[in-house]
Image (cartoon, rainbow, N blue to C red):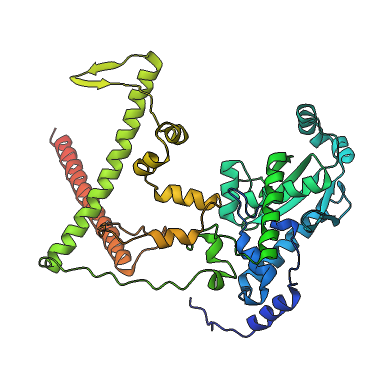
Length: 439
């Protein structure tokens, strides 16, 4: 039965105004504790965006409606979790600051260690941590809400976002606390398995080396602001950080893509031959993939035999297999530089895309340098053929009609077979009774 609907936009503008009026954006005049990780190796915070925010915040773009909803949603989640854990929490919104670089912030939650220790369901796990790391003080509690992708990434890798890690480490440095607990909530689901809460819990221990890097990075930004020197771009234009940055139009120069001219070659095949070739390629790709999976499974079985027996050769039914183990080598770049000198080293070494990206991540060069040094090379031609996967439980009208015809045909054939079988049995029965009468 159809639904009488009209897609409208009557209430939504009022709702967006409510989100915007409920969010207050203050002009940033000094560093914040949440800026921890800028100008650090593998840091997820951008020092260039922070520089713009401190010096020319009026140039940033309007905060997206999606971000407003996410911020408000995260706040509601945190308040709810804090309410549920009020038995073990103390000193909400503790103010902290760093006198050296002027960074300020507040810690929302501290866990009462004594209360936590007295609870029976926390005692066993906690006692092991106390023994191993000699922890006997109230830890910081940091609550974060993330989407499904980030949640699964942290769950599978067993670590939190570097941004969260740096922020908690900075809090621990400012409070002299030895440990913290980080709660990660998946805001897109009610649980990733039956009966399990959609939460991850991590204990973060004090990392003095990272804390020193965080403070050095913040000092670097302060120096850039004082001297009015733009920090280098630590991320590529197409990265997630730059894509969603509110200063991307100020930071990156406008890039106009040059049209690629491709010369036509040969004569195009007919539509019938083309369709046949595409269907054949798609079918063969599926068969090759299935056989490749079977081959890999078979190779794993054979390899497990060699690993278990220590043998190097095997022959079965005129099929011979050999197993060779050899060490891989790599070039020690620093040692090579020491042996051959700078001039020769520069001649034999060639920077790769991966090396340049790592140098950008380590804040050694500006990300724009990679765009400048890239030169157009020969065209790479790549052909991919794939079949769209059918949605489960959804068929086109033609497929439904086809399935219906098959079912009807099958039912009709079954009925004809049944009638023939009944006729045969009736004839056999009649002949048997006739024979009995004759006897």
